[in-house]
Amino acid sequence: MLKEKGILFDVTLCIGCGSCYDACKEANNLPKTSEDFLKDHLSDNTFNVIEQYDDLYARKMCMHCNEPACESVCLVGAITKTPTGAVVYDADKCIGCRYCMQACPHKIPRYEWGTTTPRIRKCNMCAERVSKGLIPACAEACPNEATLYGDMDQLIAIAKRRLQENPDKYYQHIYGLEEAGGGHVLVLSPVPFEQLGYIPELPKEAMPEFTKRAMEKIPSVVVGGGIFLGGMYWLTKRKNQIAKEERSKHEN
Image (cartoon, rainbow, N blue to C red; front, side, top):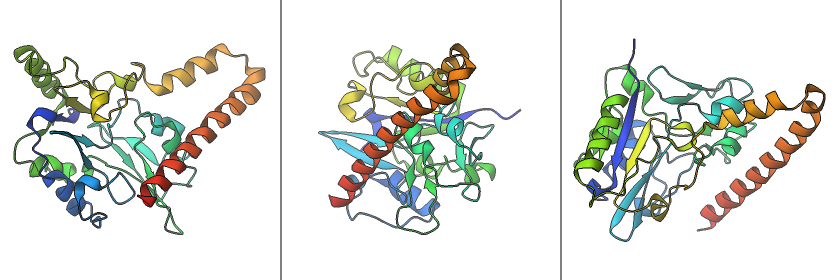
């Protein structure tokens, strides 16, 4: 049986060199979209970014959720979770509905707006490299071991040990372990995570559980009306928000 794998990113060890950014670009054959990697944003051509907050650096990438909301709303099975934990995307199946963008609690998937055959694009935790016995390019390139790749149980143990042994060094929380049901990317930080741009106060339950529970409690006669209309209202608001954020990033 394959063991579930993941990534542990430690903000206290990151020196902001951009090696993970460059390695991700090369491994995925992505063009450089900014002369300064610290000014780049997640996009259809950038799956991993480094953001600077005073003297600290934070990585943003797909969190590879245990129960991915993106997978649960995909109508055609274009998004799937592999046995090792990576959430991957099949462009040949995608119909371009963008529900995954609207559903993701971490706001990660990006759409190829500038092509007639658009795809959803995001980090896939170098699934192809891993299938060949390699590790994700970002982890391999990190010169300071700020990014570790390995078995999830070992990474969780490492994270917990660091918090316990260095209580004054770390904010006492492992981001990604429980947020939105938890995932395969964990983050340690010396400061509260909202100070580094991570989305705070996400529920501990996986996003698909909310939909499932709502469907079970509401009589079937109103499911097609109330749930559909309520869902479409929420999805439309999220789509407009995402579109506004994308336009703002392009303008900057």
